[in-house]
Length: 206
Image (cartoon, rainbow, N blue to C red; front, side, top):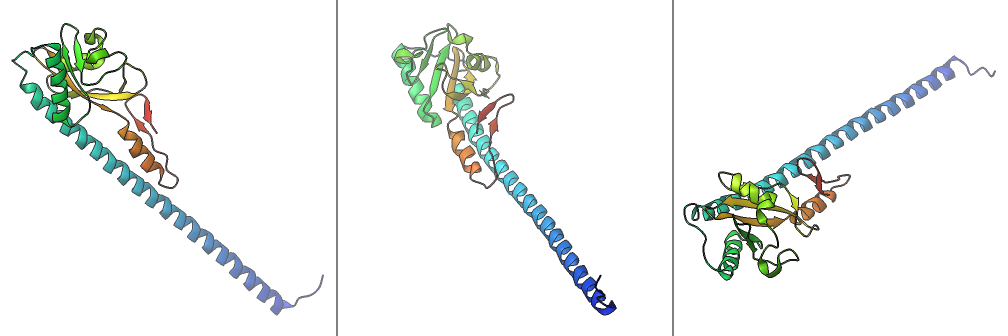
C-alpha cells in the first residue's frame, strides 16, 4: 500500500469529515423542511375544510329557520283548496325559500311537488307519501328539521330535505346535493389533496 504520509492522511480525513458533516446537515435541513411543509399543508387543508363546513352549515341553518317560520302559519290552520291550489302553494314556498323544490304533503298520503318526475306525474306523488322517511321526520319533529341525504324516488339523485310539521301533514323545501360536487372538486385542486363528503354512514361525494 502506498504511504500517503501523516499530513496527507490527516488532510483527507478532514475533507471526508467535512463532506459527511455537510451531507448530514443537508439531510437534517431537508427533513425539517419537509416536516414544516407537511404541517403547513395540513393546517391549510384543515382551515379550508372548516371554512367550507361552516358555509354549508350556515346555508342549511338559514333554510331551516325560513321553513320553520313558514310552517308556523299552518300550526293551527289546515291547508285547504284544490289540487291546483296545493301545486301553486309549492311554487310559493320554493320561491320564498329561494330553492327550486318544495312539497306540500297530507296525512291522507297525498303530496304535491312544484316539479314533475316519473313518480310525480302532474306534480302529484304516485303512492303513499306517509311511507317516505322525510315525511315521517317532518311529522315527528317538534320544529323544522333536516333529513339525512337520501336517493330521490327516481333513484339517481341525492337530496336533503328541510321538513316541517303542519296541521294537515307537513311541508318541505329540498336541495339536490349537486352543489357539494363543486366543493369537493375545488378541494381536489389542492396539491396532494383528496376530498370526500360523508354523512354518518356512507360516502356522498368526492
